[in-house]
Image 1: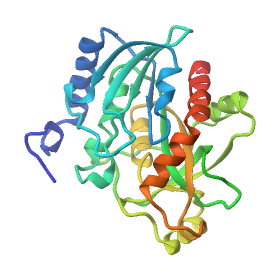
Image 2: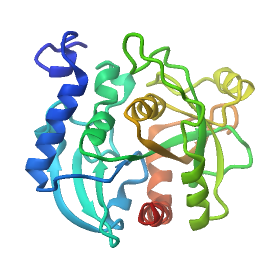
Image 3: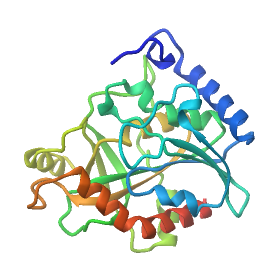
Image 4: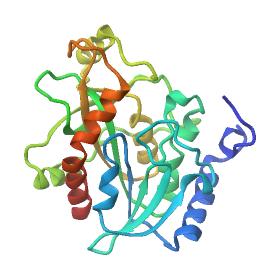
Length: 276
């Protein structure tokens, strides 16, 4: 789905230069010179933006270099600059490009690289996903402790070797548990999508160490680490994965679970961000 009119689809273009241009757009459009924290709001997490602090500016993502209109219901398509009560500037990304949209991995991680270029040193990644553990229930938030990338792709280009040993910060997970000691954690497994996983694929994920299955986050986390950011990941368990639950899966179910859980998880996320 290459579009040479899009700057990131030109193979000769420098994605970091484009991210720097996007960051310049954000500074101009929001009037905020630097952001400290960036948050990508996945399905079910959107209301957190209302609780983090005072909104300074909200801009359509399509007005920023390299951003595309979200293809998925549940993503608002805006970038919002918020100042927390403690005075930190938070860039809230409501415009995620998913790998399954077919635009290429550069566009998938552009928001993360842009956030880093605005000055953000902490990246909070959230998503709605399927749970593999039978003890989890729809509407439950869990921390991401590690991931398995099954996209067969990477945002890293050339001979770029990045250590992912402690990709999802233990320090930030411990901090999140000071807000909610009941938070469980697990390994996120990113599939390519957009189809849901088969029961056999879910069992494969379980056998190789996966606890959560979804279609985002892992590639973004790799790009965030490349940019030197500290990463905190949250999954909202919107359903138990195929073969774990007995009823068919649907996107409507994901949206419904997210809406039902939204007040609780949004408050949790806002409190965690306030403690960062």
